[in-house]
Structure formats: C-alpha cells, structure tokens
Length: 237
Image (cartoon, rainbow, N blue to C red; front, side, top):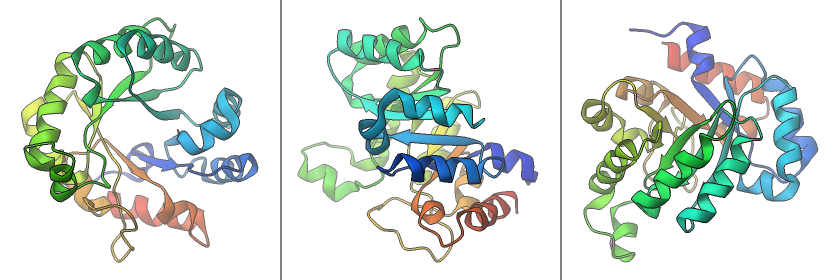
C-alpha cells in the first residue's frame, strides 16, 4: 500500500549531524513540516549538549537522541534516565552491550514522565561481513543483526536500528509492533559515502522500515527542503 505524503513525512527523520549550532537550528527550522523527526547525534550533542535538544524541540520537531550508549548497566541506566528527562522521543543504545545493559537502559528511560522509545543499534551500516570478520564477530551482518534484534525485543526495547537490507527479515521474525529504524538510506543515484549496507527510500519502506534516517543527501544538498520533498515523494510512490 502506498503511503500518503503525510505518512511519508512522519516516517522520515533527518540526521542533523553538524557541529555548528546555527546550522543545526537552521536545518531543523527549514525542514519542519517536511520531516517527522530530527535526529541529534554525537557530533551535535558533544558540541552543544542538552541545550541543543531543547532548542530543536522548541521548533516543533520530535528529537531522536542518537548517542548509542554502551557502558556498564548502572551507568547506562542513569544516562538513559538523564536523556529521557530531556523530553526526547527516542534514544539509542548498542545491542552489543548485552542483556543486562539493555534492560538497564529500558528501566532508566521508564523513569521519565513520558518515556522515550529505547532503540538498540544492531550492526552499524558502515560495517559489512568483511569488517565483522576482521573484528572476530561471527555470523555475518544479517545473522548478527537478527540475533541482536531478538535480544533487544526480549529485553523490552521498543525497536532496533538496522540497515534496510535486514528490515524485511526482522519484520517477519519480530512482528508488526517492533520499531525498525533504518539509516543507510540513499536516494536513487546518490553516492554511498561511508555506508555499505544501503537501500533507496522506496526499498526501505517496502522492506518494512518504520522510520528512515537520512543525513547528507538532505543536509548537504544545495536545497535541503527540495531534497527532503523528493525523498518523501519516493517513499510515497
């Protein structure tokens, strides 16, 4: 079933990966109404901290705080609690931190008045089978993603971050209520950059992704608004 424009907008997140506060806020303001979520990651957060999250939220965009927490369970629980108090809609932890850490993240986030969705990052989209083999991680990307996603679901996470290439298998295995968030989305004809496991917006939606995360194809475009509109149109086609 094709998406309406409004549905496609809600399911598009822009990655505001920049160090300059003014640039982050300029993009967030310009893209309001063209994307459904603003992702604030390590680069922007380490430059400007919680204050930037508040400023993006004040522009009317839900914030996906992508810090990929990975530490001992006690530390992650407290960090997740702190992040949740910022009023973010989603936050990330690394699935490779294991069961105790994932459960701690969920418990920490649940302390907020409006708990965010805790998403477990499976295998970064910059990694492929060869890179995992070099790290001594068996099973290849698809096998590792499937195992870690199942673990995240058992631990109470709301969903996972995976590449579009694994989305269809995860949707079938984990059911319709589990969020699949997919970076590594590149419009047709775009350069892959440092991403290895990628797909087009249309392919990601067809595979069952709930939220598509797009950064440079929008933020580095000569006209970010037009770039976002083109991706929405492809998602809805």
